[in-house]
Every structure is written in C-alpha cells, then in structure tokens.
Amino acid sequence: SFKKGYIIYIFNNGGNMINLNEREWKALSQVSGEAFRIYVAICFFLPENQTVCDPQHSEICELLGRKYDKSGVRKLTKQLKKQGLISRFEERNIWYYKTNLR
Image (cartoon, rainbow, N blue to C red; front, top):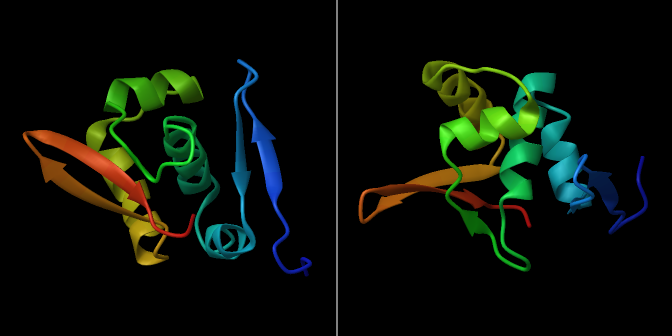
C-alpha cells in the first residue's frame, strides 16, 4: 500500500516526466498493461498543469513505438474511461482527452 499522496514519476526517452498520484495509480491497477501505456502516453501530451490534450492517434503510436489501429486504441481507452481515468469530448472538430483524476 502507498502512503497518502504518494506520487510515482515516469520518464520517457526524451527526458519528459509525468507523475501519477495515488488515485490514478489505484485506478490504473484495474486496467491492462496496454491501457496503462496509452494512459501514460496521453499524459505526456498534457501541457503543464493542465488536464486536457488532443494527441492524434499517430502521435500516441509514435510515442509508444507501436502500431495500434484506431479501434484498438478505442478499446483500450474504454478501460480507462470505465475506471474514471479519462473522458473524451469534441470541440470544433477536434477530439480531446481529459484526465479526470489529476
């Protein structure tokens, strides 16, 4: 078990860093490893101190170094939505991800 407020830091190859708080970590323990990777990728696209971003499917795949078809990403993001980690919305023909537990 984690101490209250415990934060886990994750770095990508470019030296960018994200942190996961206790609520995120607990929710992520309920999803698959691939869904976890998608969540971390989405978080890398968040502007500092923001909870909304708009990465393209191709950008997520490039960051992860894997090829996912769009239906595969949708399936994985459904796991994240079910745990309350993200939501999606459209504004001016752009789809956004919103992280809900940050």
